[in-house]
Image (tube, rainbow, N blue to C red; front, side, top):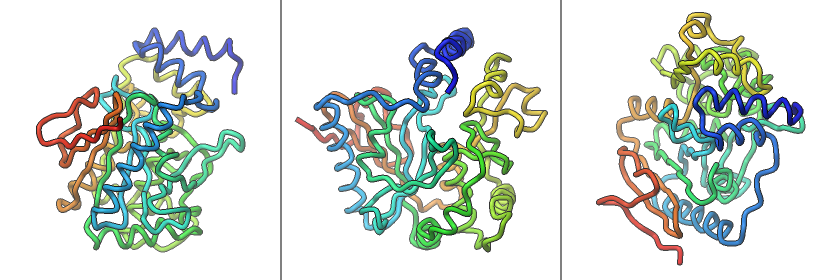
Length: 304
């Protein structure tokens, strides 16, 4: 990690680029720091939030779900969810544990990690207001994905050599957590054979299937500069045309969900949020309301 003086310089640049101070501080100072300690009420809320999600999964009749949580505040880019994984009822780590890619700050490399639902939701950017999105897939699509994602050698073979939070979706130089999920879909649904260039094969399959990564329109050269200045952001893997246009095209939960929805119209979506000791559950593709305010048709679970 760089010095605090360097970090504060980055915060200033982020502020000049129009990002809120809280986002700048979280991104620049806390990316690899230990999360803030939760108080007893926050811990209880998050544990019970996780229990509501697990109960919904248990009663869904499905054995696998694509899952995403809100982490870093990406509202400036009109994105709510930042981190995706695959939740499997039969995960050896425990029912509905989430298999995901994460950046090991100590080893400075990406790794595959199984995390219980409580731990997964605790990774939210705001312990007082959290959002989770779940996609339930038809069995014909879920079964090969479950086999692929729980195949440990294959899961590791799909891990890239270096991490970049803004990794270009169609380059193997770097990888972010959501890119690993998208490439896992390709391996499972494309019937791809294990090979040293498995990631390249997966990306080609995704392109052939018209997968569209999310677009970050930066609108400011300083933000593009940060793409090459921070240790977990890079720009050398992005096409020059994108750099000239001040944009990054990155695999994100929204791009994965859009791809799944287009490919599998039978897939269903559940959304969950918590705020003020309540959980709101929404069924369907319409986004759950900002602030976790219940709307018509939502289910509300009181936590008091």
